[in-house]
Length: 306
Ligand SMILES: Nc1nc2c(ncn2[C@@H]2O[C@H](COP(=O)(O)OP(=O)(O)OP(=O)(O)O)[C@@H](O)[C@H]2O)c(=O)[nH]1
Ligand SMILES: [Mg+2]
Image 1 (cartoon, rainbow, N blue to C red):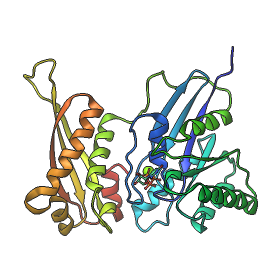
Image 2 (cartoon, rainbow, N blue to C red):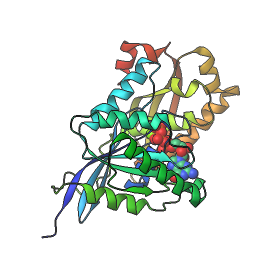
Image 3 (cartoon, rainbow, N blue to C red):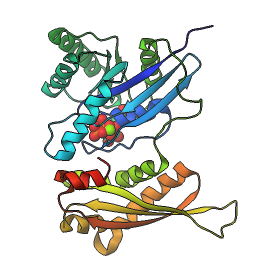
């Protein structure tokens, strides 16, 4: 019998480093949303990669950051909890940014773990810079490890956007895993509930084109999912009722837009993604609600699932 390896891995890195996009590229399906706004990921999503020689469960977590709200603190806690369960941590360094104090801070915290997982370094977004820059980053990443007294199992440059080297990342992660059983049945790519994914796809659409503080203020709640009755069997339709939550009336105005134009755009973009996810057509009913300062309010956070 050839050996079978299995285990858990997560990517860490500053917000916007490309963790969720890389997770999706490895899993081969969109299970985690991504956006150009920092702190897009707000909960833990598991992606499963099954191969004959092993199974890798990838846990996508929020980017570590200096928390400014209670939500921010809770997001960081999710990251620390995840570190305690994984076999491998993949530290993401975006190729288009210098290795900096933010990265050293994260690595310092990893180094302080009592049970330290194995470490692999990834230079992400290599499609954005010339090869020469990628090499410079790799040297800097090597030096940072020496400086901090940690060790990389590998340093792999990768582009989730073009797919270049994504297979090498999978190979390297699997190689490091211990021998182990199959945890999830073949064909399962995530354990994320469909409703949660729908909410995330709506939030992703709502993040498009908004700026400043607004991305952080947006949350989405799925209120109801109802299969439409009296539909022909080959053309099912599902009604999805969802609320987009913001923190202030002015933000509500921005999300809705002039004569409701922006909200319609959000609805269209999200609907196409949800259609793909469910494989059936959906009718999306979006409402915008104001929950004052929910990011700082323990009770509201609890209701929103944080
Ligand atoms: N050109 C290019 N862009 C990328 C690549 N990977 C990610 N991006 C972009 O970088 C931005 C951030 O990507 P995410 O995957 O959301 O980053 P993240 O690390 O998960 O961010 P948080 O969840 O906010 O911590 C998005 O606009 C992505 O489209 C890549 O390989 N190449
Ligand atoms: Mg993310």
